Image (cartoon, rainbow, N blue to C red; front, side, top):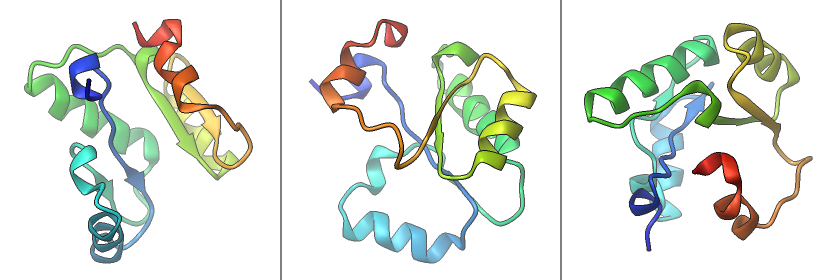
Length: 110
């Protein structure tokens, strides 16, 4: 069963140049897993997340802040998202090893 069938949606909120990021996602054959990616420089990550959520809601996806997991390698970005919406779950990239099956079984994913 695919992620969408389990109501798991993924996107990207990245401070990068869009063309190289999009190309890497294509090369890895994972571009289509990400909905409404937000890739640009200097826009607050919380705003990027709000934009993604707005698009998903327009598609009829019901999502609450406490159902969002934001993963980033920057403590500054993690803290800014926490400050903007304390209900969004956060994880530091490269420091929270977790088996993918554990994520799928997590109670907060419904």
